[in-house]
Image (cartoon, rainbow over all chains, first blue to last red; front, side, top):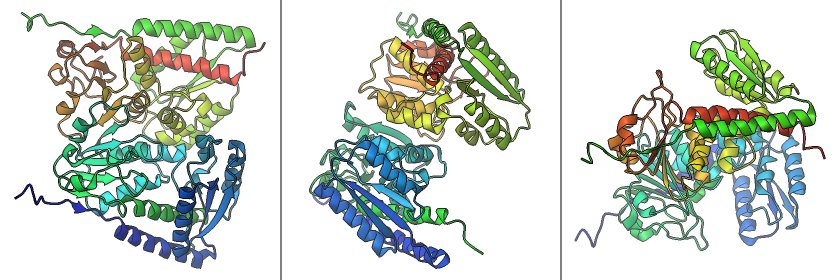
Length: 290
Length: 290
């Protein structure tokens, strides 16, 4: 009977904690406006008209508006060059009415994305994409987190997942997801393994994971039979059609905690973006007046 | 009989490749001097008079001299504050006659070492200690490597150790040794696990390592029986009395390749420092004249 009716993993819902975080962010934005007369402002820069990117940016701007954050949208033609994009990001970095900057990626075929990211002032890097932010996450220095890794850490804390001494396996090594997620877990005293497309015998490593972060963008790569029983499974994979990197149905029969897709990591990512925007504005507008 | 006379691991000698690298560095320094009239210069900054640090700095300066690199020594009192040290490093960063800067660490009890490191201009960070250099190593961007991790990678290449898909286990997570070593291995397509003092059941993880980097500073922590047979063992541990993090005699009976201590990683570290100093000077003095 146990095999037919296995105990299912508890769901790590991201929507409720994201809402709570956003409520706190909205309160902080309102407070800042009251104290300084200034509404926090996020600049959203979009190169080209990729439909998914257009949708993402619109969603982020809507969330900003609901949280009392102004957004300034800067649409650029698909043919924008690196130099042109760097100029735009430099101007926004220098503009005192802009507190946070989001460059939606991918930034187009003509753009050196790293050079573009680096044109964002660290103090306004609320999406956590600069090398400055990465080093800050790696070394525990002041700075912003990449939004998805930051959201993952908040979700783990929300569900009181202990990390010290746990074996965390991160699948994926991108500059704004896998790499910083691993560094944040390492800073919390997890033993951290980075896996990726060249990893040999991925299942044998996944089987050792107390905490698994799937962040590679391969639909349903991880199946329940790969998991250590009781593992905490965070599915941060983005694939078309709301499919994660984890085969949810089978994983749920073996994991202890698992994020749904959608409704897990995604809402936390946006909530962190908003929170960091208001934090950036608060720092830029100076300390609270007495 | 096999137990009494096991096949011993091949030694990964660092002295001969370090000598070859330093010979090439000396040739590049001489060439630069001939072309520009300028001798590459490394500034060595030492806070206090810790005997081990005094010895290290003297050794590095001697090696510079032999390679045709000028060194400018800046001794500072033990009571030097962070602000004072930052000022000194800022001046050296701005001084066109200095091409590389080495801040010997530990930098003294009164100093915020991270703040001091960050005062070094990235273009002169030939010891690879700034967050800029760390991010460059992590993302495969132009920049200098931390010297010991850079030396380890050169040693692995020297002995033609394939890294793609291999499981590399790094014990230690310091900002200038463990963390960057793992990032460099990840960039070469190894599967990378970071272990540290809070890791549970270290032996079971070490047993999975095709390549083991011991960089934690605990004398003879790793013993032969922990190793996967045939593993490549890099002992980058610094402990008093020329003792590494690996119990050499037992490890040699099980590893495939192993660095001796001394004569393994140590010489490579200094060779990388010299090479990066001449590289920095070459970049700062502009491209080769036609």
